[in-house]
Length: 210
Image (cartoon, rainbow, N blue to C red):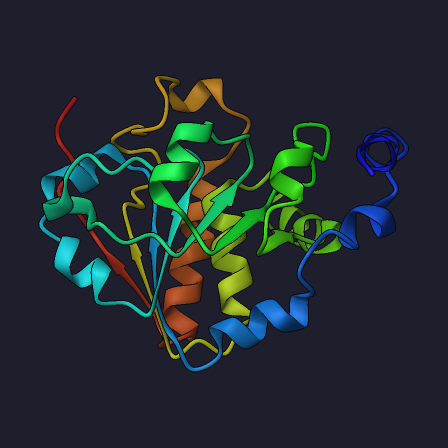
């Protein structure tokens, strides 16, 4: 099985990789009627006191390394983790998500151990490319997850820890000009979504001066 997986990655055989994944219909069924907290990795979230609000959501989704510096700011609950890079085994064990979503279209980074976990979901390449066409650059993990949630029937989606790199990220030390994303474009995408979709709200933490 692992050889089939490796060959599918090398040959870009999406159909084979998708057979390891939960179906989009099943994922959307999980979200139907639920309240969702999507937790971005902005450093500024650490200055807030949103932890209890986050934990009150039906589904709490964290991103990549899923940093949780304090319960007061970030809560303690993790239901899903959305990834574009492999997650360290100790963090995966500590967070213990029921769903692991591989969001990026880059399959070479995907590890067999992740793809064969119960509850694994492979974000469809067509969905990623459609989003990329809207903003003209590769989308972040957070924006891909926001886009996915916008197509769901969740009743309320609250965004925390999204300041579009205004305070940098808890999950790395790179600056905005060191990553292949356009944060102004992403801000515009989210602001337009907030205007047209009343299910979405953005909790804005205070951004420290740098």
